[in-house]
Image 1 (cartoon, rainbow, N blue to C red):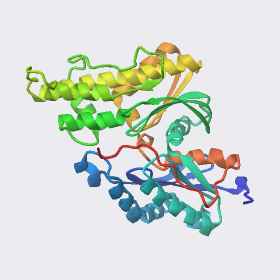
Image 2 (cartoon, rainbow, N blue to C red; image 1 turned 135 degrees about the horizontal axis):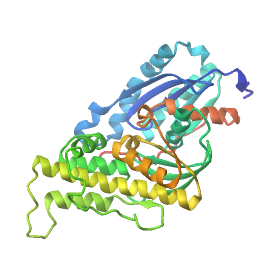
Image 3 (cartoon, helix red, strand yellow; image 1 turned 90 degrees about the vertical axis):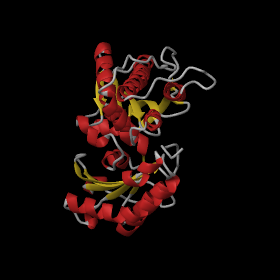
Image 4 (tube, rainbow, N blue to C red; image 1 turned 180 degrees about the vertical axis):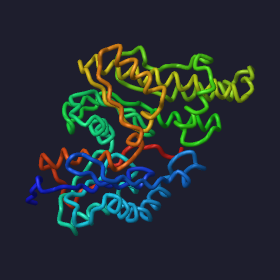
Length: 349
């Protein structure tokens, strides 16, 4: 396909990797002209996690209205779209396929470039959008319901994975602990809300790998420690303390403190190991207030420039697919036989 990139003014971006159906229009100045998100929170709330079959069916019903609304809010016609971007990895296979099918159809009918976007890399690129300037090279950290990944980002589109979780992602651990404490879903906001009334030093929960040099995370032990604190240790005759409102708040605050210590600590290790002086953080858990505070303290202590995605771009959305402009400028287009690459995201357990 012969494309005059300079003539393209608008990219239509589509995101359907998990449980949000989203579309956005981003112009060539990286200004988000519209961002529409249809949440599936009510559909999955009672299950304590995302049910893949329910998610994909909801995407089918919502994808076209969401795209139409994004065009209306941007004040443009469908014919004004110069390229179509779509998240093709990672995510739930059924959910991803809904977005990809819509994107392929639009690209074919409009005869415009199709650009595939990595959902995780887009989370980090949200920092570039907020900064309004180049923020690479940097250490990139995506902390969400399905991922706790650290990257060495040499450019806006060149990412080397240097650390990740060996079991639960941070957001998944928040969800599971919230379920153990019976305080609601999604777990991140619920834990933060309840923890505000608790003592983060009440219980010394484990901080796995914190003192080790390897850039890996493990939250299964922390989750189990919370479970034993609430239910008691199997085989032990010692009864757990009653779950009063204050006890629940103390457990939530202590869990949150342990998780955040590890998240911030591994970022610090990555910065030192790779010799970077800039940290870019995105993903749903990046909205956590304590994590933001700890990252600010850590980066200030080390003389590192910190960029955290704004709250509106932390959770899944299509606006962060503005990274497609970087691919477009380099002539990196996808063919219509493009397929999805599913991966781990938060699901019902």
